[in-house]
Image 1 (cartoon, rainbow, N blue to C red):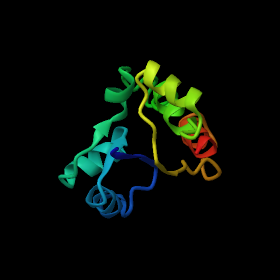
Image 2: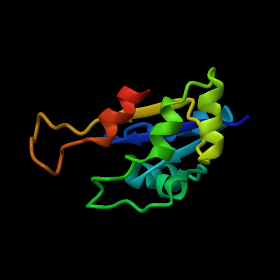
Image 3: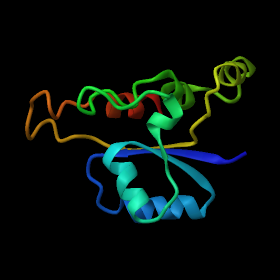
Length: 125
């Protein structure tokens, strides 16, 4: 079974090297927006979150990873048969690793820097 990593970072410093290391270890990389673009620009295979969810990014990138095919893949306990059945029944792939750093909301507290998806992914992981 291929390992999967979900990568969604605000600060992209070093993300290309990190992604390359994961790719070299056999991980399938799933990412969104600017993170996916940075990874792809480094010629590293990456799957866009929208390809996984079937839903494009919306509301100026405010809603991207908030989707059952993302959070189900993070939250599933692969030691439980019922969770494995749910993943299979709903076409959800599990994630082995979540990589995230958050928008600096404290530096500029407004709607443009509020981050819902990032903290939700971190908590789910």
